[in-house]
Image (tube, rainbow, N blue to C red; front, top):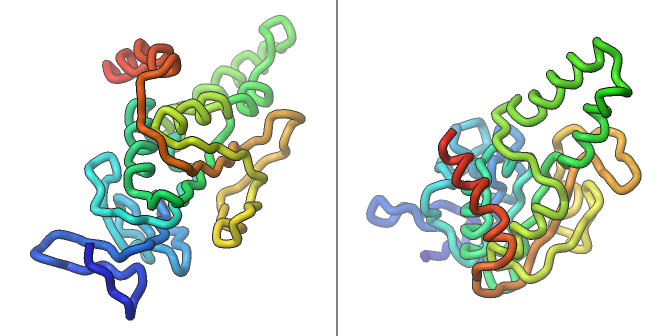
Length: 222
């Protein structure tokens, strides 16, 4: 990759192939909420977006220092999400960090639904609508709970997964990045799962890979 010392993060056009500078900070799925000092990436050319690509395709990024993706991975299918996480690990420097923020399935279940005997007739209808909106509204494809997202990150080749509070991080550059709305957390079930993943290990077949095999197959039939 070509490095532009005078303009860190700048896009360089070399033979019509996009190359990106060393030690970048990527904001994936930025939408219109571009972050200053970051390379903002989206598949729509919103104001402030620096690079318009579909990150489900091969990436032009390498030696990335930090990746931030807020309320993005839930817009990918399970298989696409796993491929995205693997691409993140591949593009990051050995010491690089990925920060993910996504709606928490546990919170959705606890706040949107009750056992049938505990619901009124109206609550049965509204509960059904709310649950389906959480899964399919706003372009959602797959919702994670903390355990499933952690296992996905480990399967993608990360070795350390640390739960973080909304807007908080031990890394100064990753503090205060979240912009999407949050809701009242429940004990043991925050409305948003926030993880920082780092470390590198070969992506290998695991019990988790076997667990999700039938689900990735069935989702791909949709």
